[in-house]
Amino acid sequence: MSHHKVIVIGTGPAGYTAALYASRANLAPLVFEGVQPGGQLTITTEVENYPGFKHGIAGPALMDEMREQVLRFGTEIKAETVLSANLGASPFALSTDKGDYTCDALIIATGASARWLGLGRDEELSRSGGGVSACATCDGFFYRGKEIAVVGGGDTAVEEAVFLTKFASKVHLIHRRDRLRASKAMQDRALANEKIHPVWNQAVVEILTSVLETPLGDKIEKIRALKLQNTVDGSLSELPVEGLFVAIGHQPNTGLFAGQLPMDETGYLQVEKGSTRTPIAGVFACGDVQDHTYRQAITAAGSGCMAAIDAERWLVEAGLAE
Image (cartoon, rainbow, N blue to C red; front, side, top):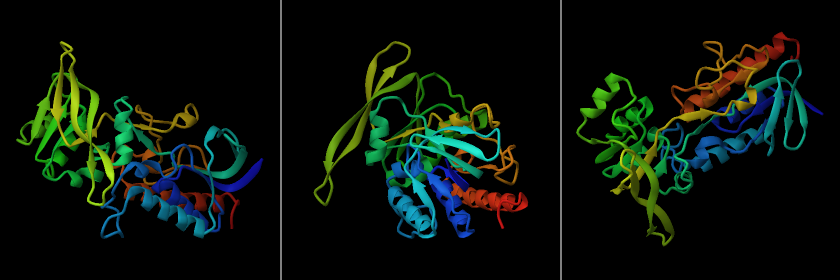
């Protein structure tokens, strides 16, 4: 069993930033990549709102930069997935798909995963840049002057639809019922916007695409329409759009800690206000795994910095680090 002073679970902006600060504090962190190395940014084609890149940067490229930076300072990264964690005793014990480990301080940066429609194609096209996204603030700019659709009926869907009217010529708000679940104030704001067109009692059952050729001669599959099914009478129809935003919620990746750490009603880890400390001394949570409000790369990175500093201070106070 391998022992480490600090272990970080997750390699999104939060995990990498936590590792960066922990490495520079001479804590020699070990990082586990998990099932989605690089986190959600690896399925974002272009990132234009992360400071320091005036021309923007592809999501996977940004995560590669972060990875190389933490490696430069001595972080050890393993392509392993944590299968179980015992937080009931110190040091904490972790088992991965390849081995067993213990640590004095644990930083949880497992993130959250967007809920998709279950069609397969939606998630696939989000990764390939085919016109499907789960983040309006990340990708809305690329749909300037285009007709797009948002799926969902809650606060997130309505908020994203309103945000997207800054760019799109028309936003179809698709909901499987005849009324939205969002707060009345948000509904009033959305339905008063002339660019938002509600599409009631409809479910997306298929994403229709076309193969387009880029100026460089490459071929890429892009969304051209949605096949909809009426949830009342079962009839089918097509809705031509150039983009689809799935806004049916996010699922925090916290199943590993069920019964060990407190979570809110939607599964997000709860931390002490103004810090990243969980109720278990020596265990810290950062990034989207504990943030259901902002969910941005920059805020995740900021909380990763906080987690590393919180962990370092705790280790010193506990007499486990100089």
